[in-house]
Length: 296
Length: 253
Image (cartoon, rainbow over all chains, first blue to last red; front, side, top):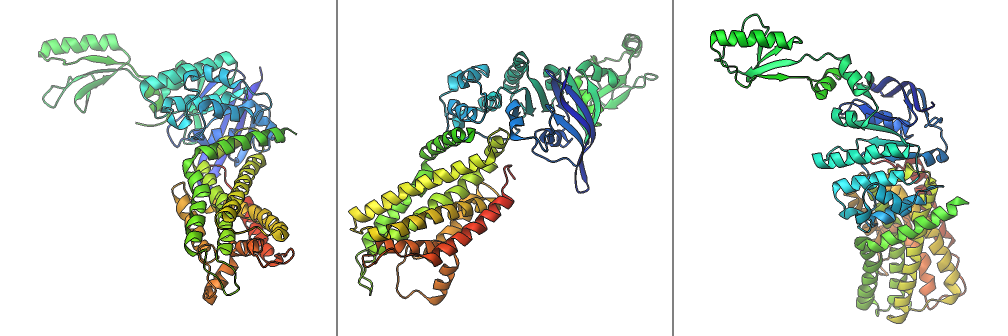
């Protein structure tokens, strides 16, 4: 299988500021790849280098076999790019905007088909400045699909969405798989990367700190489950459990849940202490992400 | 020759967008015509010492203003707005050759200039009796061609120094309005102070207006060649072109 994207030793510096500090990555054709990182981690810088919008400081980059820095315009025939912030001319209807976009490509898709693909058929005749936020994002994707691309870049496709709009957008992006496109998406939501991507690379401070499927990532960082209960200052601290107080809760971190819970309830019964809201909290993907990116 | 189809299509949609943008249509098409009607109605029947009616100066004056607003003002505003809204960047993400996009903007500005020329000359003739002098017609056409190109270049150049969408009308008007006042557009006077004459002479707008005047001057003889004016306008156009080519940005700031 050939790779749609190959990156070796990618570096981007602005003077003394090093936005990207040595990234190696290969994304296979047909793969949906998630580029996960906090704001300012270097996601957008990297994706804009791949899109040919920024020049790299060092390293080798191949996107669909071409170096984006020197690729001819025809290279863009096979790319679909959804930018983070870009509007559509508000004087045009959604369908007109797609028809205008179609004329840029040698082998465009049918604009009405694409409108249907993103679920905008009903709004095709509306001026783009009258569309809702979610509809605008659909139109962004529709525009990127007009050239029938092999590779699609999605830069933070759901940032600023409410939960239901995010769900809708996810389904739409998941549908891209059926078109056989390779997709590179950036996001700062772990759940989004998990839901959409076959593989994920976590980027922090310009470097990839972990790479693999969502479950592989969770295995790479051992976040310990917690036993918690409600406890203000008046509540007794059990001895010998390694318990500690955090805000209004008592916390015990352990991998041996059955044993510890057994001992803890025994202690509570003995001391006649009520374990209010006793709970076992397993590490979430978000915790994994925070651990990987060194956040707190 | 794929660019022919791409350019034709882009021009078609750019014209459609211009028609659907009420602000652009008002400031570019309607406002100059209001100026023409008002100024010429109020002062048009005054007579200068040469015996020429002031109306014969207002028609080329407002025509000059129309050229500047259809090209420089229009391009500076739309280009800045589209850049800041990410529309230009999206175009750059496609295989459309960048020059085709820019060419479409220039074609549209030229078509609007042509429309304004017909309207201004027509209103001048029908309402104010200012005739187009056929012998000076070539002078008019050459002047319009040179200045359309030059002021388009200046508009694109201007967009490169405007930082934001909000600043676009302010910066553009702050440059265009004073120029109109020192360039015989609104005020036709025989005793303009010397420094205003010199100031107006530095910039291209008065050269444009003065190069247009013979075409409406009833005393004109033959086909005058406004080499001096054309040279100044072309020089400004070349300056604008250099700034535009070296500083043009597709991405928002």
